[in-house]
Length: 77
Image (cartoon, rainbow, N blue to C red; front, side, top):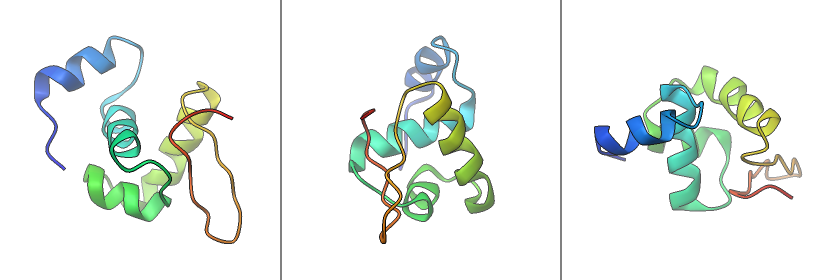
């Protein structure tokens, strides 16, 4: 997924780092997704996607509804 640099800069003004901004944008575009799907869309390392999602969850930007599918919804519960 290609996100314009200017848009990412604006998101970072809210306190997100580059990876967080990319994953959050991917999450918004997809809705409920797995960490692997988001890493592919956002072009971030899959090994980092779990840390990034945990950070976004701590910031109350997304929530993790771990079930059999390990899908992550785009909005907080």
